[in-house]
Length: 338
Ligand code: CA
Image (cartoon, rainbow, N blue to C red; front, side, top):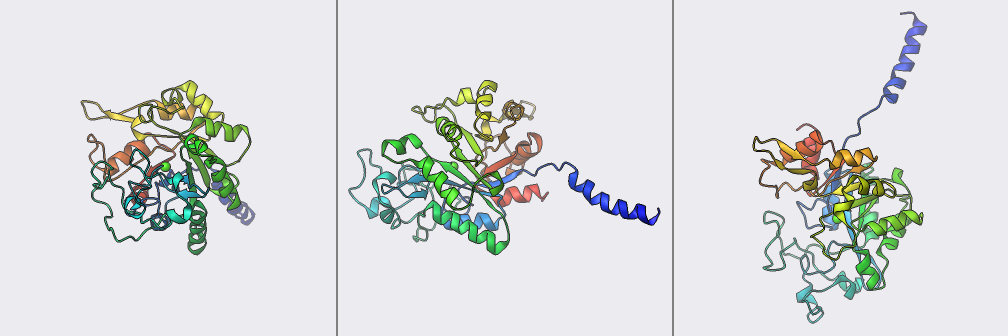
């Protein structure tokens, strides 16, 4: 080959390689941090998820009485903190202590522990972190974003954030706008659009629709999809959202869906083959990303042999765009072929 041809080839080949379509790797989204290893939604669980090379770290957000957006899953404090011992007499009639009845300074005094069942206070996941030594605290969304920014700087990575707006109607009844608080905090920390590696998710369809309609943010929105019988008072009809018509509407305001993975993987046939719904294909037909929740290595359906088999069904066969998992290291290892 003449020299000038070799030169042209040398210039062209990298260009062609760059232009070739590259199949996007599915996202590893750490559910409430690396919550399989440390109490959910704590700074420690966040740091571990970051070290385990999650692409995104998922966080739930609720608000305190004095309007601080905190990283916490439940509307009440009883399943993951020592609130009953620390603040006697502050429960409502149902016996629960609600986040909206406490100021942030009070919330900061609570010790966070591994999730327990309210009925018998036994661990929800018995093999998980069980220390009762008061090691962990609740923190604000602002602190969460600051920690991730710092870790990204020190590790030269770009781990993203995946923030869930919890129960907007409940907050509105208490004079709090949790959707506006989440959006404002993300914008304040420099998350402006999808290139900044942030998603906003919610189970509440009208809240996401309103954010989109108002042009409140350019961050991509993810519609979480539950089951109608989980929350009888929900104003979102999840059965309808899963239909092709429902998904078309979702595509009008959201970038993707976050379905329960059992809405995709239905079970196995008598011959042992996985049975799937058409949800992934139907969502794709409307250009929606699919990020199913919650894959837990220590809580498998009885028809699945091990975690890798479950991951193979969703990541290899259904080719979802990402998974929300309590065990980000295990998903990362699976994707690496180990
Ligand atoms: Ca969540």
